[in-house]
Image (cartoon, rainbow, N blue to C red; front, side, top):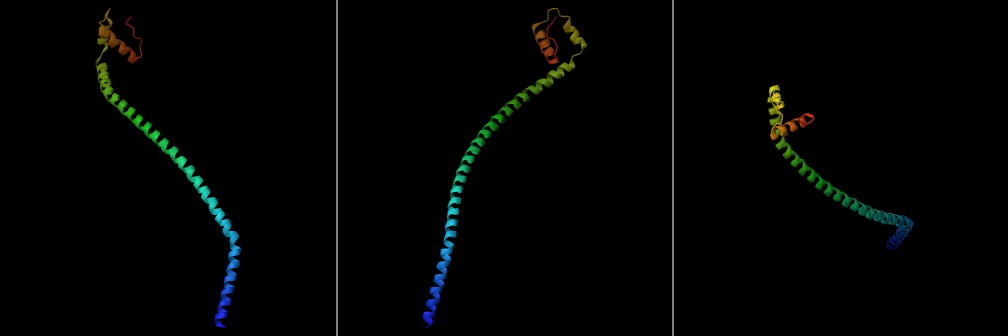
Length: 134
């Protein structure tokens, strides 16, 4: 009798569980469908992210190349500047050493030597003046 009672209780429990499982069936199916839809969306998002990553990587490489080119140009310009500045300082120092009598001496030349003409034309250009001897 005790064993029969246990069997009946077990049958009742199994019947209750079957009812619960049947009731949960649609919910489990919906959750499974939602999970499948989420997986599809995640795959699409991953593909989109990979495309963006590829574009960003390409742009990063291009930007790096441009930065290297710019750096090379800047270094070249700095070398040129480093060469030119001492010459500019020397020219300014030479100009500072000129006085009115030096300029008057050059003015008296009716037909100055070629080098004097070249230097005076350069000075006129630097000072923004007309570069003719007359």
